[in-house]
Length: 268
Image: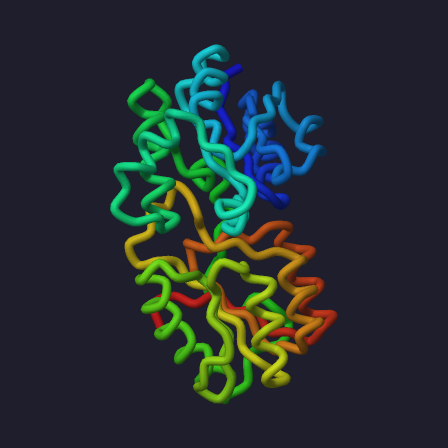
């Protein structure tokens, strides 16, 4: 059985990836992060090793010990952790010292380059599970109304420019006004913050135009819809082919129950 490594962050994405990879005949060896990765991952993989955020040398040694030559990154690490509870080892400190910026993609690309120096190729998780990527068109029972389509177009355009700068991947708009932009707090808090300004807001998640598709793809799931429902948001727009939809059927069912429109946006 061919083996693949998994560098696991938070949320359900590592679980979904592990299950699908196993279904396709791969044995999954996971490196999980203490305080980020859900403990349930242990029952979804062949082997699991726990590390602290920043222990890059330990990640490399585990994969070399297990003869892993291909690995993926699935699940995010909370950005706020990098200011409160991160313990980079010497290997991580060395690459951080040479970074000109600390944007997510700069850091992740540097980590991937360091792994590849050791013969461990980082691949995109969606290479193994392409069915998770958002398809085009209206995905929910309810289609956006005319004004919502206008907000989706506006939000997609503005959101891509914000994402280009590396600030965040989520934007909340209403009547062509920006209510909230994602920063270090993450998508859920961005949605709730935007919802405080207007009911029926439009949420858009987009990918950086220069995004390395091996990691840090926008991700949505049933939890996203639950937060939108709490914020009384009306519509979710996600970028086609570059947004991961976790538990897609359950997510759409939640959206339909809440009357939320979900749309795959493609180069608006």
